[in-house]
Length: 327
Ligand code: G3H
Ligand code: 13P
Ligand code: ZN
Image 1: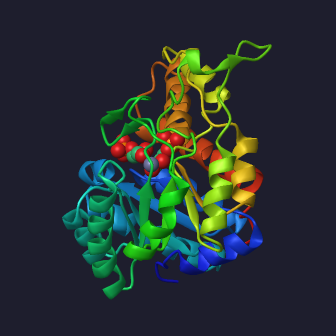
Image 2: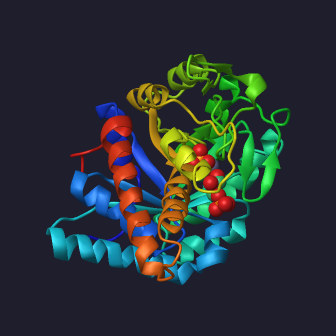
């Protein structure tokens, strides 16, 4: 199967009350871990590439690795894995155009930092080019806190999506999906300790997501696919693994899984996960080095890292997103 757009995936996810996982990819092991999990779970998949990932690995390497993953699924599992390849947080028309010309099936144009009218204008420009080339577009309204392509958005600069703006934005831009801000945040430190309470084990409990905003948006855009960024749950097992093996990640905290499950059962059709994969990879490698200080072969430590990414993605597909068996 060739690379697909998200149109069909989102329609089925909306109707079925589940969400598609959009996982950020940066190298071969991450791509293999994710796609092997999706093959085993028969789950449709979005692999997304940030401009940072594109600079790190080069567009052509990532495309070829994804094509290889699709070919491997066909060959080894006899299974057509539907994969959409998406530009994450595109910040200019030129970047979006380059990804569209280079074979991506979906792009995000993130004009969320711009004034409303300018966001509309830029997004519309990308939509026109993308639709002419059979590619779908994700826009964004509202601003998440945390780190985005090296830019740190402070909690004060973050802002929830204003539901009263969504119909005009979608109507005037023609976007195919909309990312909204309801309290998720990028990175592994999503909330300061002051924003959280602590449970009986001393673990930080973040403030709940604003489901009232999601409900209002869904009411205004019936049947329209909503996207959640910043949706890593920051598994404490990996934070612990990092901290016990020479790392230092105090108070790293993510979005509770039951809240993501609830969002997936509503109009959220795409849930973005990146930081959790990085934690799994780094935790596994740190532990490996601690246990085998004399080893130096990258295959020895990348293999368990890839296996833990696969295990984590399987857990997300089955227990959080509910998209297993939907491919
Ligand atoms: O939302 C941002 C993503 O996690 C991408 O991160 O820019 O470090 O690749 P990156
Ligand atoms: P996390 O940092 O929570 O994984 O969010 C990833 C994301 O939104 C990518 O666009
Ligand atoms: Zn994001």
